[in-house]
Length: 51
Image 1: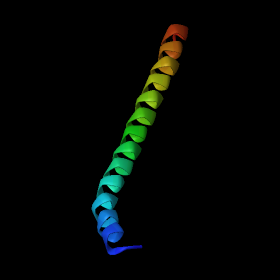
Image 2: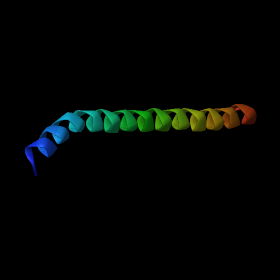
Image 3: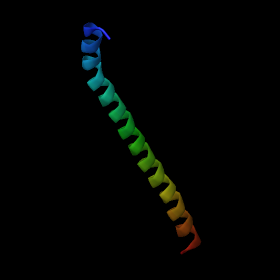
């Protein structure tokens, strides 16, 4: 690896890490939202049964 490539890598690595972290955060929020929506369905079914 050349010195120029090493410098480029050092500059790009934090950006890539931030992008990966943001992607992981979006996935967590999506999963939490989906779980909440699934729970609403379950609770509405229970409400409909009079339980």
